[in-house]
Structures are given as structure tokens and as C-alpha cells.
Image 1 (cartoon, rainbow, N blue to C red):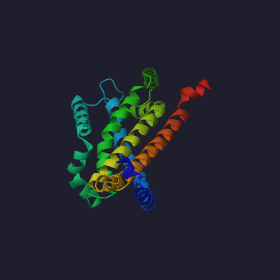
Image 2 (image 1 turned 90 degrees about the horizontal axis):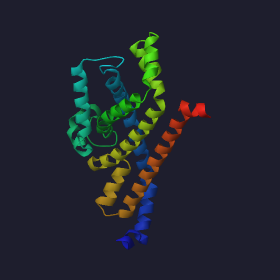
Image 3 (image 1 turned 90 degrees about the vertical axis):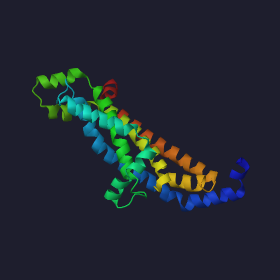
Image 4 (image 1 turned 120 degrees about the horizontal axis):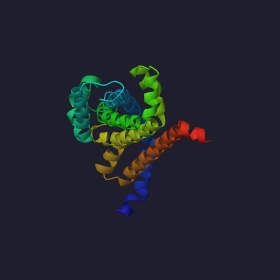
Length: 236
């Protein structure tokens, strides 16, 4: 198998595909990942804030029934495997984008799969905030919105960035799976050539490029998290 994978014919064909199709595939993967992450954050960030602020002892207590329903919805969406979720949301994807297949269409299931995950990550980050700081803000007469915007979120920025990095790398992995239903990017190349046509060298290259993208996103996220950490700045 290895001899066939690295034969001169296979290498030549892989290089040709690398030259002609991989640049667009890389762009599609980055485009889908960044847009899906952006929309997922727009949905997941407020939900994550509500999960913490809306608790009984939170800064903005909400009815217990509302919190229970919110938690159940988030847990249900998180528990559905991504491949099944993609098929389940075909009608919604078609309604929003006009088609259920393609690069842009894959953004819809990616957002639906990612925003509950991001909501839990945001919840985890906000719970790390020192409660004494929140109590001090309350004693000074700050409103719930002021505490959330000026205390909780700024204090948890390093953790939020770290968790956002986890989210974007997870979405990148999901984007590769979307190739099964016609989504574009590196996943499509890996499936169309590596799986359907048994061109394993092409699939290997696609996987390596996905790993490189993950490392880039991870490195950038880690750097930003360190730069934004006030505790490290104080030590320096």
C-alpha cells in the first residue's frame, strides 16, 4: 500500500492536485471556519453570560424555569453528533442559504453545532472571575449590565481567548467532516480523492494541511491570551 501511495505516478498526480485545487480548498476551510466561529460566538457569548449571571446568586437572576430550559436546549444540541446534525438542519440551511450543500451552506450546521459548545466555554471562563471583584462592584452600586460588561468580561478575557481557540480548532475539525455532504475545503478533497478514489497521498496531504491550520490558530490564540493576561503583566 505504501509503495502504491508513494509511487511516481501517485506523487505526480498529488502534486498536480496540490497545485490546482488545494489553494482554493485552504481558503474555503479558513473562510468557513472563521465565519462559523464568528456567528457561533455571537450566539454563544450571550448564552454563556446568561448561564452565569442568571443563576440564583448571579448578578441578574432569572426564573428557575428559564434557566432549566436554557440548560436543556444547550445540552441537547451538544449531544447530537455533528454528521447527524448536518442532515437534520437541511431544511433550515436551505431556508437561510437557498441550498443544503456547498461551502457556504456548511456554515449553518457548523454554527448550530458550535454555539452551545461556546456557551459552555464562556460559562466556564466567567466562573473563574474572582467573586470578590463582583461583590466590590455591586457594593459600589454598579448595575448588572455594568458588572457584566465592565467587570466579568474584561476579567475573563484571557480565559475567553483560550476557550475561543479551542472552539475555532473544533470548528475546523467539523468543517472537514462537512465534506461528506458536499461542503468545500480540505475535507471535500480528502473525501473525494482519498476515500472515493483511493488516492491516499492526496488525503494525507489534506490531513497535514488541516494539522498545520490547527497549529496556526492555536499559536495565535495562545499568544493573544498571554498578551491579554493582566496577571502576567503585573509579574513582569
